[in-house]
Amino acid sequence: MLEDADVTIGVVQGVLGIRWFDCTVTGMEAHAGPTPMALRKDAMQVSSRIMQEVVACAMRHQPHGRGTVGMVQVFPNSRNVIPGRVKFSIDLRNATDALVDQMADEVKAYAAKVAQDSGLDVKIEMVSSYPAQVFHSDCVDAVGRAAKKLGYSNMPAVSGAGHDAVYMARLAPSGMIFIPCKDGISHNEIEDAKPEHITAGCNVLLHAMLERAGVA
Image (cartoon, rainbow, N blue to C red; front, side, top):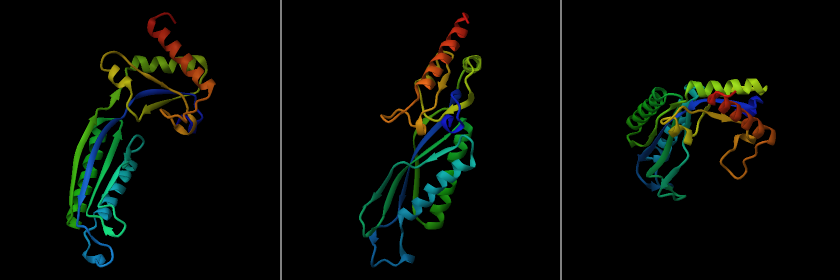
């Protein structure tokens, strides 16, 4: 987002809440050739409808809604067999726990309707839950003031991924500073940040720390 907006410093307000689910759709395996379309109980087709709803739900809950299906297991995973069972992951995120829980309720309601319409069994089970974390206003403001003082372009930002700062925020006032990375890629061997952006982030950190220490 920083790269897209051509902004140097992201003043991080907090971290999105995360809910992970496993969804299992059970139909009936059958041979792809002999089985007429009207008689099929295709778990993949029903699963794909729910997968599309995960993305559509996130689109309805902008600007911070996120919806991802990143893992799919198809059984029996044969070219000429109608899938009898499909298990896939659902990753939902938003800025508050209330919003991410609302998203989860909407996806579950849609899945229940698809199950009723298709006659296939659909189960959604929670795997993990990570609460949203708002950072301490004093730390957030210190980062914003430091960026302004140093003349760096800046904008409010949220972290869509979990960070150690989430857990530190439960122990002490905490905040984060973002800088742009090429194509938004980080935590990866192809991560590429410009030296001047790294310098800017370090300078903002320094001045925010000095302010918090009462010596700036």
